[in-house]
Length: 124
Image (cartoon, rainbow, N blue to C red; front, top):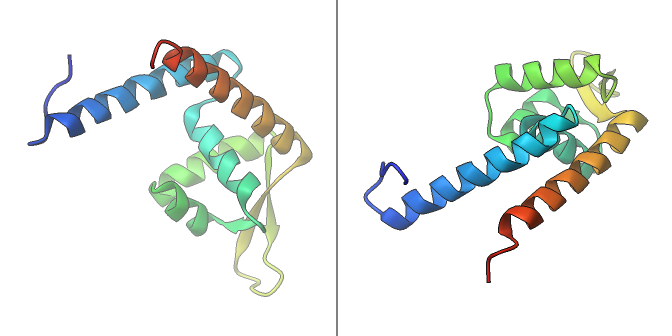
């Protein structure tokens, strides 16, 4: 049962449904050493036409810079993302996926699709 936090029950139910779907997907991703937050970062980097600045990734994800730094540090430590110098701005650092990052992104997207299909299979 949803805890109603807005004046619109439909909004509350949508929020609750989204939360539960995210938890369901998160559980599937965790079995493979991934998470929704990491998948979102990988997804944004994979879809970008060029390497992104940390600030751009934060804005696209709608999360605080500190949270983005934590996620990127983890992805970099695992060899999925690399930091490279901006070609025109010596002070700026860009983020891009490694080959392993692209492979992990594809794998996590597959897990995400299967989990969402399973979670919504009974819906008409």
